[in-house]
Each structure stands twice: as structure tokens, then as C-alpha cells.
Length: 52
Image 1 (cartoon, rainbow, N blue to C red):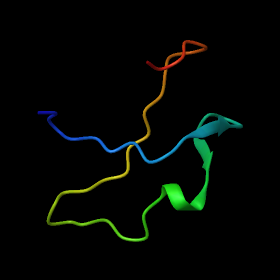
Image 2 (cartoon, rainbow, N blue to C red; image 1 turned 45 degrees about the horizontal axis):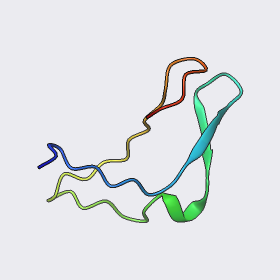
Image 3 (cartoon, one colour; image 1 turned 90 degrees about the vertical axis):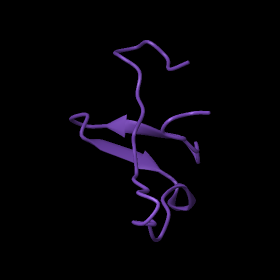
């Protein structure tokens, strides 16, 4: 069991000063379920090291 569970929905890339991520609109949900404590999270690697 993963705690917390993670549902990977898509990919994106960082631009400019590193504070902005570009992705497709279908990756970001219209509404988050507060009762299920849903949040949007950006998972990145370090430098040029790819995420595994």
C-alpha cells in the first residue's frame, strides 16, 4: 500500500526561472476533492538527473 497514494496523470517541463511548469490542460483536474485530501503535486529530479 502506498502512503500517500499517488496517481500520475501526465508530464510537463519547467521553464524560465524554474518556478513555472508547462503541461496539458487534461493533466490538471478541474476540482480537487477536499474530503479525500487531494492535492496537486509536482515531482521533479535534481539538476539534469532524470526521475525514476
